[in-house]
Image 1 (cartoon, rainbow, N blue to C red):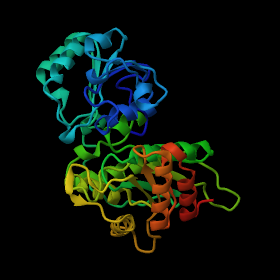
Image 2 (cartoon, rainbow, N blue to C red):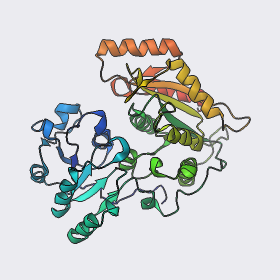
Image 3 (cartoon, rainbow, N blue to C red):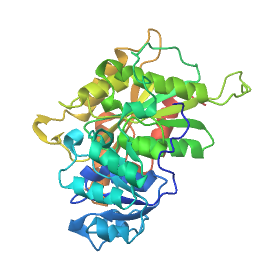
Amino acid sequence: MNPAQLNLIPAETPLVILADGCFGESQSKLALGVIRYGTWPVASVIDASQAGKTVRSITGMPCDAPIVSSLQAALATQPKALLIGTAPPGGVLPPEWRAILSEAISNGLHIINGLHFFLTEEPDLVALAAQHQVSLWDVRDPEAYGRHKFQEINLQKPRPDNLRVIAMVGSDCAVGKMHTALELHAQHQAQGLSSRFLATGQTGILIAGRGVPLDRVIGDFMAGAIEVCLQEEIASLPAVSKGSAGKDPSHWVFVEGQGSLLHPAYSGVTLSLMHGANPDAMILCHKAGQMHIRNYPQIALPPMRELVALYEQAAQWVRPHGEKPARIAGIAVNSSALSEPEARQALDQLAEETGLPVTDPVRYGVSSLLNALTTQLDCG
């Protein structure tokens, strides 16, 4: 696969999103990401615990799709595909959802699946899909992007002098790494500058139509998979003429982060991503008020200045000799659980502690982060 868009489910296909019992919570971040940034129209969302509400009333996003109690109720909204909109730990399919998927397929709905559980490995579902002529898209299946594509080790291949790679890193999972990367990418492009968003997880791939499902790649090849994607982005860059100073305009790639170096389950994915990306700069993402790794109360988060130093040290381990160190340029904070005054205070305290620009991308935008990146990367 080259960086061209995947079109396994066309962009105009109306979706019903299955997020029963958790819509609007962190467990439904896949659903929320696709609604906020995706191209598919949303016909309805299944969550019996919030039936009767709308997406807008729960999330504040400009989407008036109804929340319904069942697939039967959702069918009245005329969807053409069903998106499994949650990402439970381990990526398993809740047993009670199997019947829902079978019913959806029987009603002619394509299935978009971001779980580690692959529908294409279930003979009964495959046969049912064939009978009703619908697609089963396992977004996390690396083979969907080309057999053997992600089976190379990281070789630290040379890059153009005008390429800048910016990686999102985090204090934990589900703290806004994808959201921050997408906002930075959008604002960079809005300024008439060249940039790409490199998706590294199922939600980012659903939004961008390309990328790598990094947590399904063989461990030896994870860093290499990021390098493969970056080399594809390099190959796709438009030919440009040199500026008045004889320098090519800079091209930025914003790499979606995964996990955290502190996470006992996912730290290996994080380190592989960092070493494969070999970033020129990083943005640290954090959730305001979080004191420990979610679901691991015994693992406390260090002071933020120590976490900054930890990521900068890890990035330096593979930084080629003579190149500028990769630094944390700023901090993106999810302050959604705080009031406006509380959010301002939390961000100000973090800025004072670290000496870095700090913002909440949703509340206050990412201009301060882009300005810091431009200064750090010396890109005019």
